[in-house]
Image 1 (cartoon, rainbow, N blue to C red):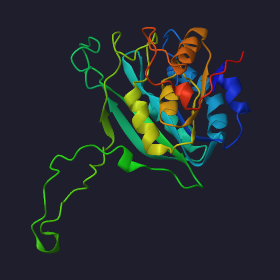
Image 2 (spheres, rainbow, N blue to C red; image 1 turned 45 degrees about the vertical axis):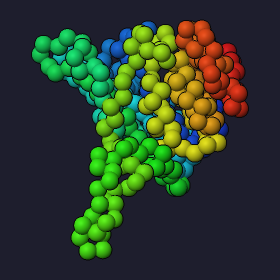
Image 3 (cartoon, rainbow, N blue to C red; image 1 turned 180 degrees about the vertical axis):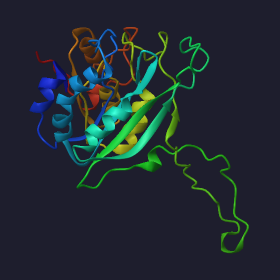
Image 4 (cartoon, rainbow, N blue to C red; image 1 turned 90 degrees about the vertical axis):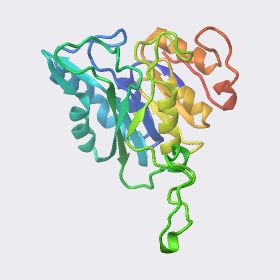
Length: 276
């Protein structure tokens, strides 16, 4: 279900403990096309505080809040937003179980021109869990190839036994995933669009089919699109008409270039509704 409107007003109306995972990237308050610029880091955090408690309230016990954030730069001072959000969510009883580094594998040579500091080539994905339930953790669904898949032990009872998991290894907490450029096949008209691969890995890892995934800052709907492809239910909220329309078209099966996708999420049981 897609909802057009203000998350700060809509999230408090969502039934308590009805969501298995919140997966989103909030606005950073730095003046991009979809946000209002905050004058300072303190002003920005104060403006975001009202959504924290109601957002946590929507999550089931044992469910996850996945919060992808970057940095703000003020007077040449870098403020990692993760440092400010972590205590806010902890104060609501969430446990930080992983701090995932999303590395922009392709950005190192050209992501901005900096002469007094190193080029930023990563952002942070905070993974919180709500206490009191049984968290899902589908590690086998996101394993990556072993470096030495055929290596066997040679000592005592382990002699001749494979020394690694044949399904692959734990991917660790640093993920190299390309950002989207203007000519990327999945790119819609949004300056900070999630790559589908990032959403896919997180949704597979932390939810099961039939679970509900909420994105309160939906943008062009990547979280919702991938959730439906993977057989999850979805709720997406977006305040800007332009991006809401693109997300709606996307979940109806349209590609960025106007062609129809071979896979239509709406055929897998999703709903696309607009409310004012």
